[in-house]
Structure formats: structure tokens, C-alpha cells
Amino acid sequence: MEACFNPEIRREVRLTDKTYLVNDRYYLIDFSAWDEQLRDWLAEKTDLELQPEHLAVIDFLRESYCQNKRHPVIRTVTSDLARRYATEKGTVKYFHTLFPGGIHQAYLLAGLPMQDSCC
Image 1 (cartoon, rainbow, N blue to C red):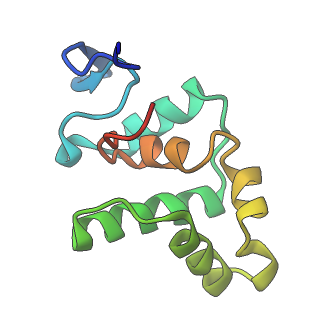
Image 2: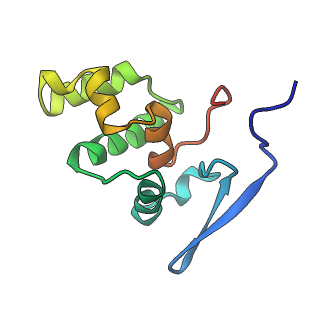
Image 3: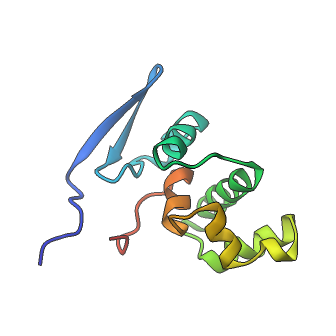
């Protein structure tokens, strides 16, 4: 069976004066290399106009990943949205209005590594 992506393929993305190493789906290879410049470029590449709620999710994902060394599940993310903003914003449906590409789009923008099951 053929892999859905080739983990050996890596590319360089050069923005201003910094180069980022990403895989063939633009997931960052080195979590610590992430910055707002890359986040904004990836948002533009995925046709997403970042608003404060997007930034809150991205910050939460990065903090959670740093603390737990694993990708937070969508339920944890939506609970944080409800706590920060309002109960009606703490739903999976609302999350998908923020990130139409789902949790993996949010992981991408947050600079989290690609999950093994992410095909």
C-alpha cells in the first residue's frame, strides 16, 4: 500500500529573511522554528483571514502541545473557546466555521508536527 504522503519529501519555504523546513504538506519539521510570519503565510495559503478567535486557538494548541507533547483533541480546543468567549463558541460546529479544514488546518497554522494518522 502506498503512503498518502511521502515523509522523505521536504521543502524550504523562504519568507523575508528566514527559511523554514516543511514536509510536502507544509507542516513544519521543527516545532521551535514556528513564528507569526510563517503562521500568516500558511493562513494566506489556506485562504484564511485570521481573527482573534483563530489566534486564541493557535496559541492554545501551541501551549497544550508544549505542555503535553501531543496534539490536543478538538473537544479540548472547543472547551477552551467556550471558556474564553462564550458557550455558543465552544462547539465543534463553530470551530469548523473558524477552520473549515478542521483540526488539521489548525495544527498546520500552529506549527504542530504532522500526525502519523494525518492522511
